[in-house]
Length: 491
Image 1: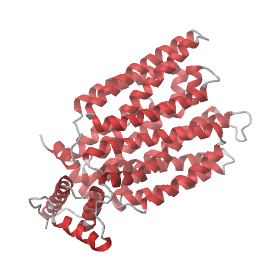
Image 2: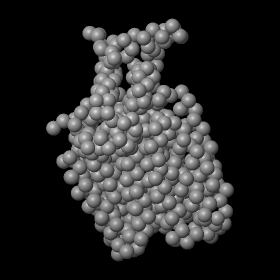
Image 3: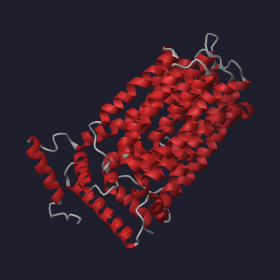
Image 4: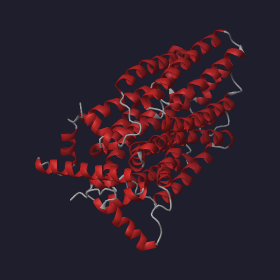
């Protein structure tokens, strides 16, 4: 039976939980504030995302070292393109596998599991003496990044309260940007083998240590009918405030209603049957379509083309000799902008941030394209080159503050609870398929259209996509996950 709230909104399970904690250790349950606990819960996905940032940023420092005259493993241009893009290719199946694992075995286990291909992949690169072993390592590290896609945002979304959720979800892109920066700094001063060794050892150890202290997601425990564990996990993460008690009441009531509907309809207790029923509901397909569009716009705005080919791109923008210095500037700006995005997502409405970010991204990318065109026709004009750099920094600022973090934030907020594992796996998979296409085709498109032509295409996609998305995106700020889901199911 679902417990009913009293006038003080302290339910039966609140009293039982508080009394149990008092008997066990004589300490107040709120000796650590819920905010600190939610931040600590986000630290495992954050550490895993920093590791993923190393996977994404690695090719920018890896390829120039392999292509140098002193390289012990010489590569061709086509081999370099596969080394850069194969990680992105592996992320798509990784997302589908990650979605299945998190739905079947839980969000925590998914984070444990992704450490296995991370360790094997980076050690494969470290010991590589030929191209095939390098490609194997890139595939496995990309697979690990894909495995993180579904559970990372979903775990943060399910363990944080509405007022902190946007800020904490935005730390995913902040962590990614920081990982790319850290990888590029290390690659500037150290050999690629050293960077691979660090990635293979430090981050998996950190992830394991943090996870050992964290509870499983309360929402997932409810879907497994583990009510008592779900209550304890929720109260540990969220405290015993009236708002937290009310939200827990809503989650339990929704779970009971769903269970009764399934019993009344004689729905078989298997995933495929439940999925088939839920796919017909608007709370499944509406947010799914919006998030797929978000990821498409984000990827085809060119953000990862810049990340993967930073050194080569900087040669075109600022000229030879400044590329590594320019790369560090770009990476630093990306990190600072991602931090600003965390603050803005706590303060601003999602739709407002989308419009500002999308418009600014388009304008700056168009300006970069024009400057690169005139820089090519006016060789040696350093003023135009550095003007290109300024607009490129503007592009990084705008896209990092909105278009880049918003898809991940919305993935953690909008997806239907009972199919969240499948839906997040599908949206993350689609994201990384787009990721692979953008990264794999950038070199070929640049050869045909020139880099400034490719940037112009990215700018137009960002502008048109922003206008379409602004019209269909509902506002999710300061709403509980259940309120957002109910909004899609109503007229």
